[in-house]
Image (cartoon, rainbow, N blue to C red; front, side, top):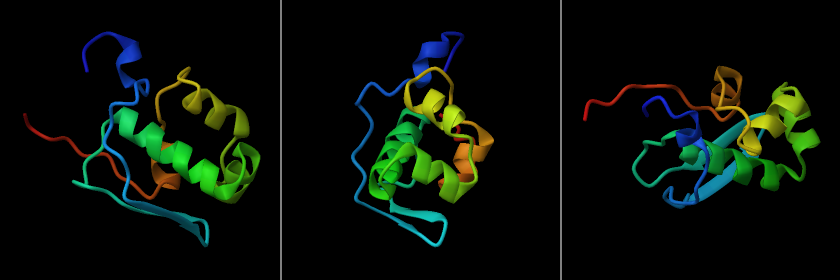
Length: 96
């Protein structure tokens, strides 16, 4: 990623998601290759929020602060561990 903190912002270049569902307080998504960068995480988050209906509804359902969620969606904060967990994802490192 480098030192530039803007690299994680969603530029719209991440691969499209195949299918997303929000059920029983969990986000279930089928990903094309199973690997997302931070931009892909934000795209997945946007899709999950849209599926739930609103930022407030998603935040309440997932136990998140709405202001924190809004900061991630608006590119003011990178996805946090709580966002990663809410999306049912985990952080891994891939060697280039």
